[in-house]
Amino acid sequence: MGGVLDKRINIEIDHSTWPEPGKGPQIPLSFLTGGATSSVNVPAMLLLIGFLTTPPTSSGISLSEYWAWVRYLNAITSTDDLRISEDFFALDAHQKTILSDDFGMGIPMFWLAQKLKLSMVCDGRYFIRRIASSIGATAKKTGKRGPNKSPDFVALDTNGIWHIIECKGTQTSTDYRDVQLFGRRRSKLSGARAQKNTIIFPPGYSGQRLACGVVVAHELSGEKSSLKIIDPPAKRQKAFSVQAKDIEEAENTISRSVLATSLRLAGYRISSEAVASPLGIKPDTRPTAGKRDNERKAFVAKRKELAKDELESRASSQRSKTEGMFSGRETLLDLPRPIQVRGREINVVRVFQGVRSNVLAQVRAEDLAEGNAGVAPSKRLSRQPTGVSHDDFSAELRVSDTYVADIDLLTSRPQ
Image (cartoon, rainbow, N blue to C red; front, side, top):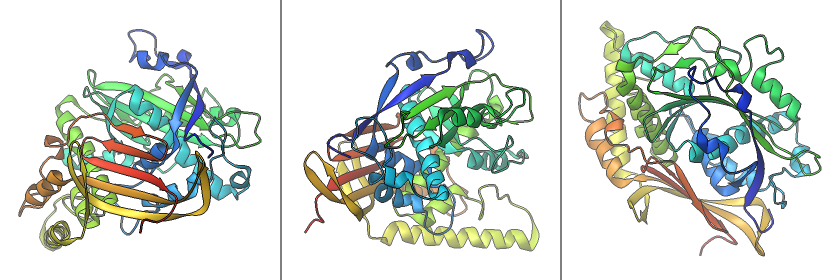
């Protein structure tokens, strides 16, 4: 990676795709500043990828909790612009697709978090399933691909405005990226422009509906890595609509997702599940009746007890920040091969992931209280902007003033 961890990437904003005045949200002024290039701090982006790709609900261990920091630090070249090494580019198609998908999310969300002042970001599929259950609605069936796929992310900014974001990534070409964004036939609703239309927010709360495409250039490529953002006109289709009366529940849903992901990354797996799916195994589980509901109640009660024990007894590291104490876990990871940063040979990565200690106390006292299906997390998660800070050998990610992740690049394991 050479001596610079900040990598340039070209930014392409397709102004022509935004609605005419009076027919929808206009292009943000922040999109028009900063020029045709932007800088992405790689360690900070990897922390963000780890957060974005860790689902609020899942059993077992998510690879995104660990692998991005080890695998991708070795993939970046020493050039000033963002490029993948030729060795990494030569991997089989499946592994290249994973990198394209991860960078296809990490790069645009890194840029958009600053430009739109995003506070909380939620997986689109979780959002639809959870809020539909909360308000007693039937969610539109979503697929894992195609025009009925839920958007990648639902995001809330610091002003309470909601944004829908669909992300695509490729290492092939800018032409193929356009196919990902628009579909092969622009007259037919397909590609990312279709997927961004599957959730509708009411006027006054609805912000940008964006499709983002990333081309990740490799070491010998004649192209440069670039991010393209479009807002193609929406075409009428069946969508999951959030009504004005349901905005508070929407805030509870996104807060619940952020808190659950934060708990999982900090090592509180059972507590994470209890927050993400308070009424059962799945986020959209609802009370029923009879024997099946008695089994559900017993499962929820047992999980709450296990979560309480986890919060009380699990050995956690603590880190003091200017904004308070954070409890979580620290992990040391050996790199597959060293990287050079400003003349130092980096062999080890140290990552700390933590949740604010007073939030953990509130989870135990409120979310896990007897008979409580979960106090609305939005009552205590702030709308602070998601932020990153970094220097030559470290980076920090902060989410909603509740979760913090640090990454330190070390020459060797601490004694």
